[in-house]
Image 1: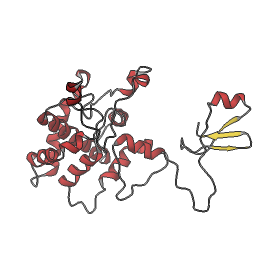
Image 2 (image 1 turned 90 degrees about the horizontal axis):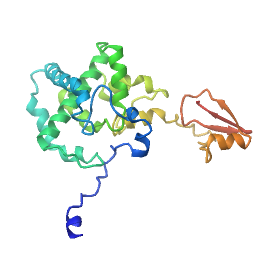
Image 3 (image 1 turned 120 degrees about the vertical axis):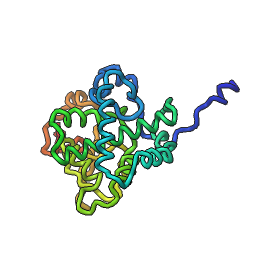
Length: 254
């Protein structure tokens, strides 16, 4: 027992927000939670099926450094990630079994790949099929890295871009297909990672102060409600959380 207590892992960081998909969900459809094109972060790092794109990440790093120019070099980015390594690791539910050098290398390649893809999409230099595949992989919970480190390297690389879009604007544009509520980037809005951004996209628009409409969530399944005499209709809203129940009729986006 003493040995077990001595080998206890430290408590989870308050930043922890990147998890493995629970087994009971994963077993229903494993492919739904597994990246198809690119591994981002440590959970699927080294997957042999994704090695082709991992090799392309190195080319993207070279393109990114050329885009940055002579103001910064590779060591500047490595040093920044190294300083924040502990905080980055704290975002993950489990201890990441990678050496410091391998972890920093993975984060550097993944961040630069993301930034290059976002830039190329904004410049209309990314093929539709690749963009579609990447967005699906980028929103998977197990395929995440903290947004703050992406933002940190972006700000380090491009400190003065007065006439260019911000990282959050570029990111929202990249994921526009999922932005059903037409979410507008808000200064200082904290985004944990891309899956969290997808969650934000699904939130209903702010209610007017004068509005008396309240969010309604069912306590029973659709089958139970239908058996009780409730009818269902498709609402005009595209928000999955915009639910309404009135006069025996339940309205939702689907």
